[in-house]
Length: 162
Image (cartoon, rainbow, N blue to C red):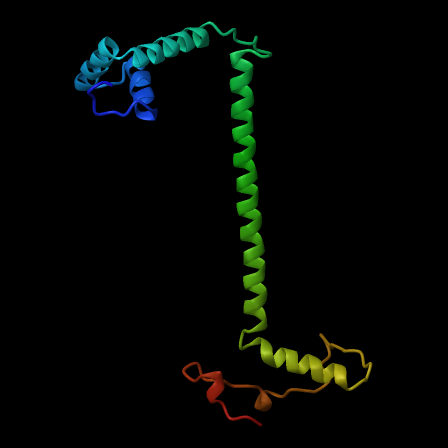
């Protein structure tokens, strides 16, 4: 057996492969050269790796069905489609969230409660009276003495109720 720090298994195989690819340090290169000079088992493994490397280099490449320009155009078109889909999803999701927030905000707003109560009271009477609006001829005469005079420095909530 040889005198080296790598056991003759997967580590040795990886070291020889890295040596063939030129990816070893100076110390590892020296160690591999010593192994190749002294160990026939390592020499056989090295010869098999050389043969495999040559065979891989001589494998035929299949002919391309499209040109490089067509392939790059297809790739960029696919990327553009994905970006458009993401934008559509983001805009659609944002619109849905905005509608939901507006609905929830409208239902729970403090000004909405009296309107809901009024609508429920009007519907519960069962009367199908039509709402009549007199634009030019009011039903009740409002004289200037009865007109609503609100001082500008006073809040509407502070006014006395009749």
